Length: 126
Image (cartoon, rainbow, N blue to C red; front, side, top):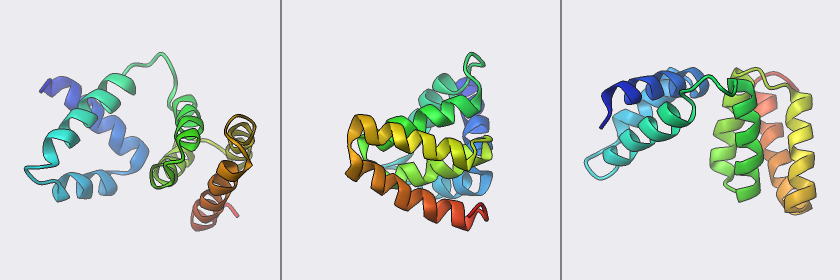
């Protein structure tokens, strides 16, 4: 494992998803899942989020569109919270969901709206 890239990824991951969430996630990992946690922290967060070419707000918006397209709603909820942390507004989240509707279909956009409403309500934005 590239320790420097892991540490960079860990910082990016905590900044977006929250230190408590990340620390609990890592603490819950065992010998079966820890190699994956380390790899994803290093690769996705260190390599993928670790450069400064694309700002974190834009990365979060891209993630919402891609994860929404995949229909992975547990991850979409997590990244919706992270997107808010990274400065994505309610109006921008709505616009992203509109794009999901156009390219992935209305049923998938309705799933995104359901989860977004939950997150926005819990975050005091609705």
